[in-house]
Length: 459
Ligand SMILES: Cc1cc2nc3c(=O)[nH]c(=O)nc-3n(C[C@H](O)[C@H](O)[C@H](O)COP(=O)(O)O)c2cc1C
Image 1 (tube, rainbow, N blue to C red):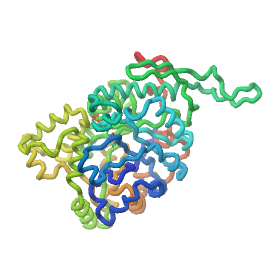
Image 2: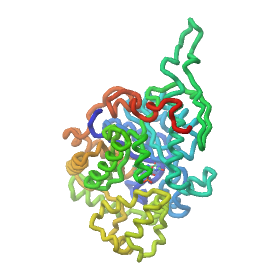
Image 3: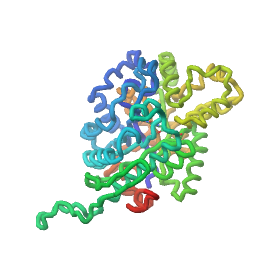
């Protein structure tokens, strides 16, 4: 296992990912290029120039609301990440390409086939962010009346993954590809198997109709932070995103996950934990603060509130101001959408009085996502603080998904590299080999490999 820090460049094929409203500034108008291929080619070349590990593409398959986020182009429209990956793979040589795909939008047979194909065409550089989806409209787009209950989604996701695991890991034995003209066998039918999966939601005969790709199973990312979500992460993920908003909170969240891993029989170190890192870069601290104020001034708060509402299932436009923070916490805990959002609010405001009312809380603007503003050296200090807390890496959140990466790569990366906090060159091999240094394939102990074709519970 390598212990260097991992860096993902985080984006979404959409006009505005996390900087709601900024598109109205001269700097933000670069986002008009969101639906063209060329700006994304520039992004991946820049990320590779900065020795990033991964381009990490987020995705949703519905709208947050029908008013503010559509008006503001906030995570709307949203193009399909899978469609861009071959092109970005051709433009790069080393960068990992991780796509988000949720369990509602495609059948696991079709999806496993797509990712095997992409893993071939990129020489083993594919990752998958497994999401169960939190948008009511996303479910309505695929035949459901509304959102499927939270924990049921994780059960569904496990079956989805088990189908994919069987196809990726077990349908084709090693040695099935012969290319042997003398015996007239391109493949060996004896070594290619049906999977005959019969489960609660899926019936899949197989065999997998794409031969095993360099990694077989793509590198698995997941961000569950509820009780069910963490269990799912520990059973399946190789890299997980912590909800922690501060290094102190990360210490707590890592301990929770490590403890769970031990209880579920997994080596805690085999699960990489990474956090979101949002920054505003300035050549002086004063300049960084000025840029942060400018960003704040151009935030479209209605779009941001609509985004939070769709995400959490809590209607932020109609919370009675006398609602206490404690009541809000309880609503999050039982939300059928994203449950862990509340932890970030609390982490950022550790002294928050739970009996304070929502009105007072809003006044404190505790809702706003924190961006660290500083010089490259101060950002490197911040990275060091997170590393000291035990995190394995970062999902770097840009201000604009297009263009901004040059600033990070030109100014922050050299400082990180000089301090040994970021790699200066790529090691050869597949995405998994680069991240973990232990081969192209999932670990032998991983559920997908350990339990074999016939060992997946009742399925
Ligand atoms: C860094 C990060 C990226 C995420 N990307 C997506 C995404 O692209 N699409 C999506 O539907 N959910 C995404 N999520 C949400 C998670 O998949 C999950 O729903 C969320 O962390 C809540 O899980 P929980 O209910 O188990 O706490 C992301 C979460 C994090 C922390």
